[in-house]
Image 1 (cartoon, each protein chain N blue to C red):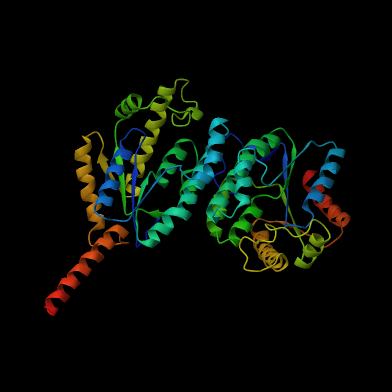
Image 2 (cartoon, each protein chain N blue to C red):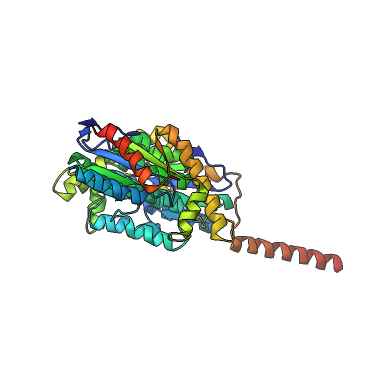
Length: 227
Length: 247
């Protein structure tokens, strides 16, 4: 049974010292193929007889209405949005992730607070403040950082769901079109992820490769910590 | 430690447990300052319209944990900070706040959140130029509340902490712990302690003196009505001058 480790004070009022489950995180910018990998991993883990719970960003019933409202307009300023996301993250951690880990589930998290910090910092939030804010966060058993070049992301976006306002960071851009904004924004995001990779000991996966190759690499690494 | 207010505006804050009479006092200060022709902005705890729907939902459904409650209150404060406090202070306005970050510190720590963590949470805010802390006994606060308000609410009573099944008992225990937190913070954040058991007028007199000290020699942003009046007076003076010299 693994000891529960937190980045800071955690949840002092909760009794969480150990749990049998494992927290597996997939991180990376938009368009690196995280959700595809989460799906493949889920099937693989279940095939091997593990119970799997998956969770993503912005799914808490507590904050969903507020966050949806916020996305409709440009009315929420950076600190407020940052704290909204932190509320959402804490809610899911306490009410979904930790209970699942206690029950022995393998939790596959599509993104974790690293993404939130990256988008906050790109929007002018103090990096140290943001890191301290997530002192309640659980240290995952492993973090896979799916890293791809901006060119790869552009290709996938163009041949996939198309450019989108938020993914292109249009809310903070001076560019007059989604392409320029996307390139600038995602370059900044990758920069933030790269800075965090060392600090939080991400396992970097080359996401320019094929879906199958990526999947094999992740499974190989996972095998090591699961045995 | 919070960073100092770089001005030019002034930040004056009232703190204290429910029923300490702080809202009555800040309201009198607000009206008095307007009467003096100052530019004043007033803001109260948990009043941001954008965050309200989430707070309401969480309270109704009792969905909050100490951490999420702490965070959503901080989100509310941050929203007011970015849209009201900060621009008003930069414009040179006197900002009056009924409750401030210290309310978060006191309540969240009582709920079991880490004290250092919650201090970081609000570290974007400035140390006010004046923090008036209204100190009362629990007995007094309970009496004031039960005589003036119909019902003590779930979270106000700290019912989420399971201190007691009875609301009034829970309220007493919860507010008692908050009182201890306030007393602990008095030195850390330079609170001016007001004996809130005294008559309203006596307290108001003392507070006005403290506010005057803070505002001494400070001008700030003029009130448009006031400055228009001054402008007129100068115009008239100028005119009579002109008339005299002509005549």
